[in-house]
Amino acid sequence: SQTIHQWPATLVQPVGSPLSLECTVEGTSNPNLYWYRQAAGRGLQLLFYSVGIGQISSEVPQNLSASRPQDRQFILSSKKLLLSDSGFYLCAWTLTGSTGGGGANEQFFGPGTRLTVL
Amino acid sequence: QQQVKQSPQSLIVQKGGISIINCAYENTAFDYFPWYQQFPGKGPALLIAIRPDVSEKKEGRFTISFNKSAKQFSLHIMDSQPGDSATYFCAATHSGTYKYIFGTGTRLKVLA
Image (tube, one colour):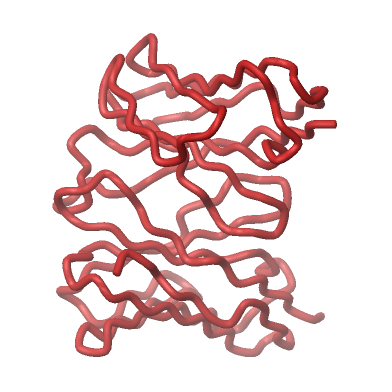
C-alpha cells in the first residue's frame, strides 16, 4: 500500500530564515506530487505540482519554490520566510497519468507540516 | 469558471440527524468529484467520490448526490455522530488537468 510522509511535523522559524519541507511517497512509482497551503480555518491553496522528476509547475509566484530531486521526493523551500508564510503545508499525490479523467483520480494527502513564522 | 462553491460554511447537527453539505460548479468539463474529511491538525482524508455517469453513490452513512443538469453535488451524512465533527471539503477535477479545485470547506459539529 502507498504511504506519504511529511517532515517535520511542526516548525517554528524566524522571519527571514530559510525553509525546507520534505515529502516522500512510498509504494508507488512516478506519482504526481502536490504542495498545498492551508491558512488557519481556511481552504486549500495549491502552491506547486509536479508530474515528474525536475518538472515543477508553480501556481503561486511568491517567495516559495519546489523541487523534485527524486521520483518520490518533493521539497518545498524558501530562502527568506515571511510572516504570511505561516500555515499548514500539505503534500499530496496521485497516480501517474491521473489528469482528472479515467479511473485513477484519487488524491491522497500527507499528515501536514504546521509552520509558524515569528 | 474554475471555482467550486461550497455551502454552508459551518453546520451544527444533533446526534442522529442528517448533515447536508452542498457544492456547485461551473465548468462542465469536471468529471470527478471527491469529498474529503479533515480533522484538526490532520491532512484531509478522501471520504467518497463520484463521477457524472451516476446520480448517487453511497458508502456506509455517507452519500453523494449528483445533479449534472444543475451542476451541483452534495454530501449527506446519515445518522450523524459526534465523531463526524470535522471540516469537509468538496473538490472537482477533469481530464486534461492535473489540478484539483477545492471548495472552501464546511465545519461540521455534531452535538451529542
